[in-house]
Image (cartoon, rainbow, N blue to C red; front, side, top):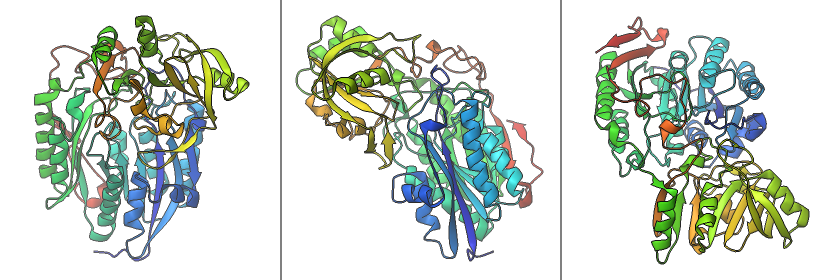
Amino acid sequence: MTTARGRRILVSQCVQEVSTFNPVPSGADDFDVRLGDAFTAAQRGRETEVAGALDVLEDAPGVTVVPGFGAWAFSSDGTLSGHGFRTLADGFLGAVRANRDVDGIYCCMHGSMVAADETDPEGSLLEATRAIVGEDLPIVVSLDLHGVLTGRMLRHADAFVAYLTYPHVDLRETGRRAARLLLRILDDGVRPVTARVTIPALVRGDELVTDTGLFGRFTRRAAELETVAGGLAAGMLISNPFTDVPELLTSAFVTTDADPDRATTEALALATGFWEVHEQMRQPLVPLAEAIALARATVGGTVIFTDAADATSSGASGDSNAILRALAEDGYRGMVLAPIVDAPAVEAAIAVGVGGPVRTTIGGRLDRARFTPMPFEGRVHRLSEGRFASEADGLTWSSGPTAVLKGETVTVVATSRPVMLYDRSLFLAHGQDPQAFDAVVVKSPHCEPRFFRDWAARMINVDAPGSTSANLRSLGHVRCPRPIFPLDDDVPFTPRVELYSRARYGVLPLPAEMPV
């Protein structure tokens, strides 16, 4: 056993989740990028993975945190440009090269990043990191449970730690778990071996809410496995179904201390149990006309139109006006609040100033295959530079120049760029209380209950067009493995176990893959 004395730990981050069905590419300027002390200072004390890792590492005797490169996207986006990925990779790997003499590395990633010329950016970064630091330096990575866990990622990191909640309320604790595992490798000599079983399923819906749905039984079991003797990490990565890549599958993984048999048994149990109920993990959707009828029938309180098909937190463009158009065509007279990404509409608002009349169009400027601009007439209620604190994690978001436009019945918060919409931050930062409206368009599949569900009169999951629609067959996957649920009928599942371990631990050679 060694001690933590003199340990230097590099902390790095590169986080983005994309929808490859969003036609609008993203670039490096869609990220908040910070280096060194500025990176850790922006994270410390927040509800983030990096903050959690810092909680542990900065409290550990003799450990020095080496702040590296930090980049996180203001929203999920369309596919990252090749130039954008190379820019981020240069910064990320430059920090690794500058600090290759550290004793260990913690990486905060997502798992659903895709670049125009790289379908596995996280695997690419980990492979390049391994080439720089050598085979013996321990690397532990935290991931979103919507991440795609690839073979390349598994080959080049020692262990992975994933979220165990959805909606995600354990980001900070995930970072703590990752940091504690890294210190156990360094100080206690644990020898991670990971068993992974892939499952041909892409799932959505309320059954994924871990507090109440079927999926929670598997994340709770994973949490238990981390606490038993020899257990190091476990999780279910259900992937982002909008990230159409060659390894888009659900993964059950279990990491133990040099015990491949235990890892295999537990990973198989997670995977087979999941498969038994996977068909129940689909999101029922309400057609637009029926959704509006339900809103009309709701007396008192606020109706939430959940437009998960245009969820910027899942990679959509954010410029859908489908629900607003349907409400207008129906003659709905309730007061409506909606977010929309439309830089030209913001420019029109800026041109006339606060209080000025504005006649423009809203939406339909980005995802032109799905939406068309919708006429809008009203007044400019508020303008801002679009920098505000997230209600969920405290990080600063940047929506670019932003305008609140008020029509006769519709209030639009128009942004120049997409931001995460899994809480009320955009609305509240611009003086709009969702509870003051009859109907609110929420562009996120699931938010923490306190943000909307706890007080809303009705929640409606709307079947609207968009690049993150839960109607997965409508999207047109071409790169993911087939057959796969729900894109195909009668999908077979033959469990196979893949085993991964770094050679220095003495548990190799292991069979790379073993049928069951």
